[in-house]
Amino acid sequence: MPPFYNQRIAITGGAGGIGRATARMFLDGGAHVLLIDRDAAALEAAERDLGTGRLAAWRSDLATPDECALALDQAGGKVAALVHLAGLFEFDPLSPEDHGVWDRAIAANLTNAYDMAVAFIPRVAETGRIVFASSLAFRRGSPDRAAYAAAKGGLVGLTRSLARKLAPRVLVNAVAPGIIDTRMAAGLIAARGAAGASDVPLGRFGRAEEVAGVIRFLCSADSSYVTGQTISVDGGMTNV
Image (tube, rainbow, N blue to C red; front, side, top):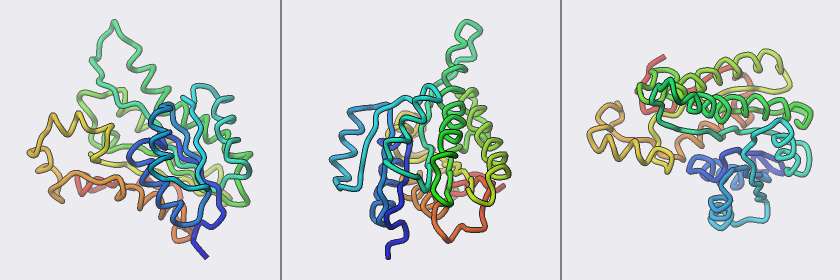
């Protein structure tokens, strides 16, 4: 029997590069997948790309607890895993005249993660998994995206707290991707150019499938004794 046979799995930010790669792995494993994303056009493209009767899509920016709960209800039943990838990657000018960058970073990268987790708890199957997407930025800092890095660090604290609170029924972990070759990182990769990959011990930027594989592991039976952890997927850029 496929490892995720008949399980319902919700993926926020599901229309992005990592989201699509993750959805494909779960679909290949027999799951029913709900993609949640704020970008309607990207969701339609993901549906065409993934093309299966076990895929559903829901447009939402997850701006309120009620919207988060409504989004999860689109799964059509108890949910085995919540993979929360939704986030905002925005330049931070550190301007006293623009507090909006901070407000948006916290809302779109941290507050909605908390709200999704709270909505997930009463909707979880007999046992469940939560996987959050933190970032290399929380470990190393990001000089041009301080608000983003702070929000991603907050996700690590949320991961550790929920892992203690929800054990043993729900295992809660996070991934911390480095620079992954997706649409979200396209501007950063273009700015750094080929020389940017020289900072990575593996000598290249990551692929969406390489993050998705770690997410799949954290949602599988193979990770039954792993909770409260943040796993770096960054080609060796950090060693802690």
